[in-house]
Amino acid sequence: METLAIVLGILVLFFGSIAAVTALVVVKTKRAIGRAAPQAKRAVEDVGIKARSLTRGGVHGRVAALRSEVRGALAASRRVLEAGAPRDPQLVEALGLLARLDSHAVELDAELRLLEREPDTSRVESRFTHAKERGERIVHLASSLRWAAQDRQHRFTDDDLARLGEECEAEAGALRHWAPAAVEADPLRKP
Image 1 (cartoon, rainbow, N blue to C red):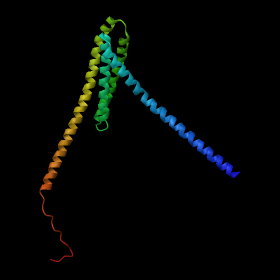
Image 2 (image 1 turned 180 degrees about the vertical axis):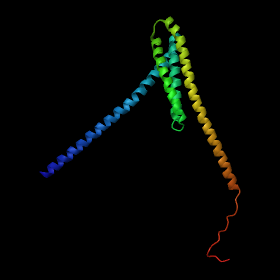
Image 3 (image 1 turned 90 degrees about the vertical axis):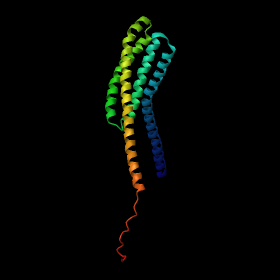
Image 4 (image 1 turned 45 degrees about the vertical axis):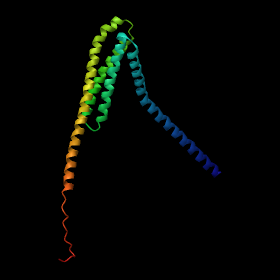
């Protein structure tokens, strides 16, 4: 009877641990999908916009091209700033500015999405001029942040390389000028 209870206890523990591991895997998988889904959706949208900018003619194609350009400039700037932020705290501040710029880009993207679907070409043409100016300003500002971050990174790299070069030259000079080691007096040795 005791062996039956022990076997049942082992089976309960075995199936309980399987259920716990399964639940953990399900939760982790949902989180991973939740994080990857927006990125995948964004990538699909970007490809669709790029395709429309290349295949549609006229003002509708220019609207799609502007959407693609704004998204591309912001994404490139975000990548550069996020890559450098752990090493350079000043880039964290630039990321804050980029986030503010991104909110303007989201508003513009919504406006451009509506223009892209507008069937009246003359209406699209009249509104596109103002939207294009805003888009070009956003692209320029995002690019300026990216270029400044890249210049800053190159400057730090050049400065570090120059310091390293000076240290290597000093060490090489020290290695070339050697003197015989001073013979230490052995306390047990008599002169």
